[in-house]
Length: 77
Figure 1 (cartoon, rainbow, N blue to C red):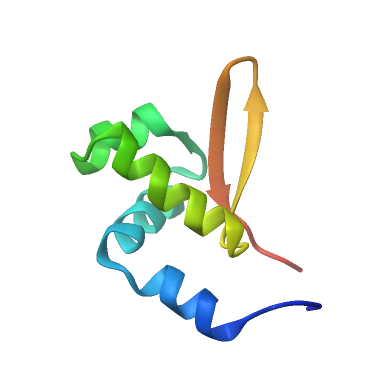
Figure 2 (tube, rainbow, N blue to C red):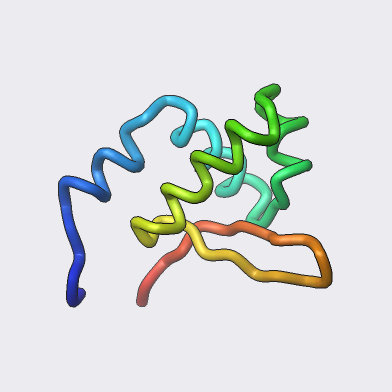
């Protein structure tokens, strides 16, 4: 893994809100921000902020379909 930073990775997955997001993504496979806000009861801005950090650290990936962005856990094989 070129450029992988363990401290950033563990900080990203260690936050309770991000853990809840990851749990929902694990259960559902893929969700958009709107679905995540409904499932975990947080604002769109809060969920988007945490997803952005998870994406930057390579924990989640995003797939765009029209105006919707769908997030899923990124598993490198």
